[in-house]
Image (cartoon, rainbow, N blue to C red; front, top):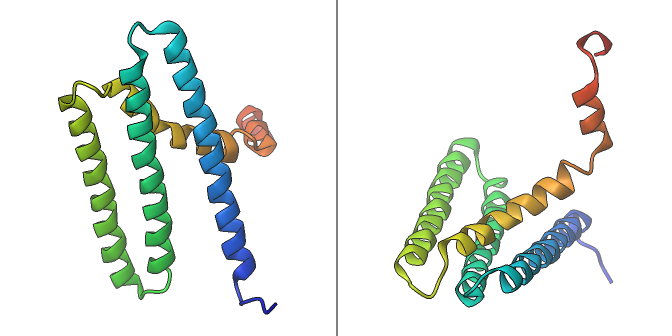
Length: 144
């Protein structure tokens, strides 16, 4: 089997995406279980979580595709392309929230939990797992 140049980097990115996807699904499963235990009508919340998570994962994938394409462009063109895609992703998020507000069968809090869950997973796995991050927080200015 012939390996392409940069193939290891692509594999690493794909592995990271899968890891984030799995952790986001686990977190959202936890949200749904909590809803089933504590809420009177948990189905609308669960539908909201699924709705929000779906679009959160879509936005994550769109971000990957945008950055992957922008890296191969000249800087001014890349900036314009990235900005247009940024606006597209936020427009999609706005539409998702609007639909969630208007639809009776989708809970807005569940949708927001689904939208935010991937961000929480990324923070947990990339920021809070770093021992150096916490060491730097508690260092005195004189030690730096």
